[in-house]
Length: 245
Image (cartoon, rainbow, N blue to C red; front, side):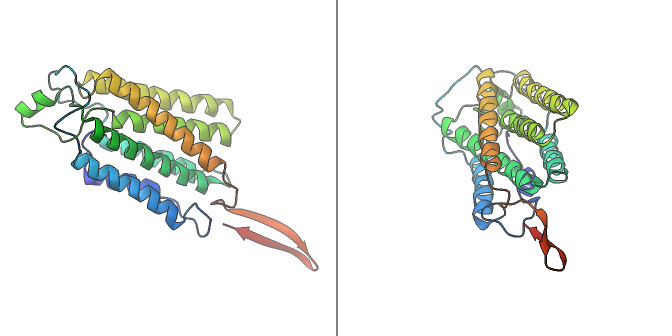
């Protein structure tokens, strides 16, 4: 996501920790939290200290600095929180597992983005102009974190909606809104001279692929792995209720 402040990384961490599971084999386990928190921590470090600043693997024409940012970091972080809340508080019995999956998709997308930025080391198209104005940034250009996160959100929310409901309005409306917003974000990053077209194309592909893979991963887990279920079973003198987490 460009230069991300500690506050924004904190919000992304809250996205991952937003759902609580009492007992499971992977969802809510120390292994899951270690993977998600480790991914976000790695992303935060790489955003501050990208390993390859001196010899970028990709170049590009430098452009003027534009101060306006149509999709700021806080707006994207807020969108993540709204999305994970919508999943977590839906009426699906397996909603906890899918909320955890969304947090994992965000964490891995951000880690992949920051790692690629650091390794490729491409300068932003407005970096030289920004430096003259005293607005230089440590973040690199390839590929866009705003766009990878936007397409991560759009892909996961679309797949969850298609899994969770058969209502045509939701099945059509969610992808229309989220992919339109993601496409607008991609356009704005190029229009504001913060990224090259190749940056946003690669970011859209990365966010889509990672999110789809994580959704498939969590979708393939057994219901007992992070889902809360209630079953009524017969006993000699009445009925009993068993709750599994």
